[in-house]
Amino acid sequence: MKNRLMLIITLIIAFAVSTVFIVSEMYYIAAAIIVGFVVVGHQEIWSLLRHGKLLPIDERVTGNMGKAIRNSFLSLIILLALILLSGGSMRGMPEFFLGGILILVEVVYLITYLYYEYMEATLDGRALKILKAFLLLSAISVFIFIFSAYFSNIIYPDAATAIKYRMVHLSIFIISAIGFVVGIVGSSVLFIKGLLARSSHITLG
Amino acid sequence: MKEYRARLNLTQEKLAEIVGVRRETIIFLEKGKYNPSLKLAYNISKALNAGIEDIFIFEDLS
Image 1 (cartoon, chains in turn yellow, blue):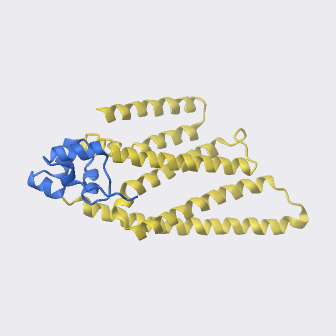
Image 2: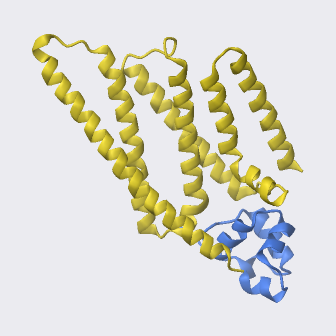
Image 3: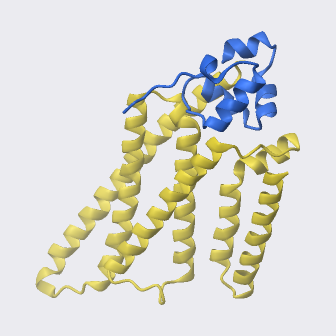
């Protein structure tokens, strides 16, 4: 009963907030809020659709949600700090960019939630450390990419340093792109391994 | 925990329902991958008709 009430309250809040943004013609942010609702309540929605009942939100789930919220909040702070450090302003920021930041934070929530919910239980210590390294590599690469993209907008090099500057800028872009691909591929492989291990041990008992 | 559950012919799902947690939480507890709160440990012991110390072992990691 308690979690059903929580889901309904969250749905009403998400609906009300996204309606405000739709009325204000900020469609990207409204979409990000709806995606956020689906991300946070994905297990409950899935269980409701598949079994017609809601799963209990127990202490383990609450703990995992707390850790995921902490990580996504931290990533939001880091992202905003990087944008402000590189001379960007929240006021002049395009709406799709704000929506993109929200989606990115939601992705961080989903990945860290899945990590605590399934990977910690199914993967061994060494695989977990490698997965953590791959996830960090992907996150750092995205942050560097965004920072360097913003940073390039506020530097106006003179003709003498323009080529040198562009070379450095291009190198950062290429390195962060490679880092992102390596991180995503590596963590995807380990995630699939962990999820397959989960489906095999879940059938026991 | 698995042993006590088997004695009472309880499935993981049934035990989860009795103590008000998800089935995955019971699986993680049986695999030793999750440390329960005192309240959950008490509820599980009660559902399995055993003492907390019979089912859970306290390890001081400090």
